[in-house]
Image 1 (cartoon, rainbow, N blue to C red):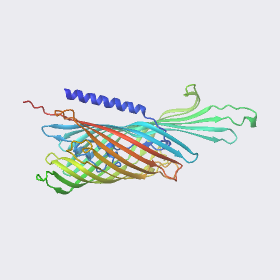
Image 2 (cartoon, rainbow, N blue to C red; image 1 turned 135 degrees about the vertical axis):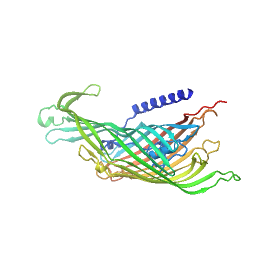
Image 3 (tube, rainbow, N blue to C red; image 1 turned 90 degrees about the vertical axis):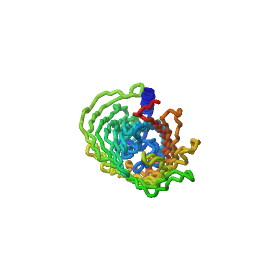
Image 4 (cartoon, helix red, strand yellow; image 1 turned 30 degrees about the vertical axis):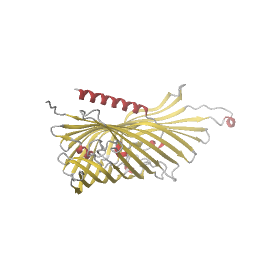
Length: 469
């Protein structure tokens, strides 16, 4: 009973915390106007610290959930006669951005609290595990104002606004046969994209015409609600390169050197959306809100299809591992070093049959991690240190010149001791810092960002068989 109580309180805390950060997230990114908006990082905090490596990554200790590759679920621990270690993993980010434009010369900065994911990983049987995950896929939030001169009329001000985003909720399974692990994620992608284009006429030609005309403000608004079941696949293959036997005289454990090969594929999706469209005149009220005056055109429930392309990732990781118990496959990675490539043909994206200002996306990542000690009493020695870089081309192509991307990352995993010797609970804090840039000298608008991410993983043994003396 105490275990159930503790677990319930933790889950309640996590859900409340996630709701708080969801309500607090705000930003203004003009790039989110295109496609499905700004694509949110698909990795957990551990993987972000390594430059975003996920394709060939698995945690042999079972203290993180690599939901980007479901084949990794096969490594969740279940010990016969003891029980299975269940893992809860929560992540959020503090995202600081600075946008700069050349013409006109302007600068905009924002800092936002953003939820990253809420996940639950659990072993089902030996070499078989599962996970349940909820995470944001993309975000849309922008407000852009431009002024222009309408020939023969007056000056005009256009205000472009957008909000919304897409989320994922899914369940996955992973199974291992020897060195080969295969897995899948299946779930639902859902969200909303709301856009408004407001036009206001600024009277400037009174002296020329001798009269002062009056114009109502106009708004063209579209709200698109979309949803679709999705499916993704993953595979990992472990190759043992060399084994160094245990040496009792030197008090050294058994070591393995090996390479993990991995790949994932998220299949092409077609969302079936519903649109509400309105063309109206309006005025602002005293509080800055809008009051509709007259609807020129209005329709609801218009069907629209949104096609998004497949995403493929392949990678490899070299590793050195301490073998604690080969019978139960209990291991610790001393260090890992890897690389991967992710690609997607976003030029195939279609919204109601129309293309958008998008590019074929690719990103190359390099990274690794090191664990200095598994037995030292010093917490910093038992912490894991991560590093990485990533570069490529963004999927958004707003000005036709493409957007180069680059980022460097650093991460750390800090173990927190259990409360007492009778407890099987284990908690780990994971941190990741990403510093990067989107755009280059050929772009009018560039974006520098710093993203500080925190992940909290809590695990405990469930389904334990109680023993009494």
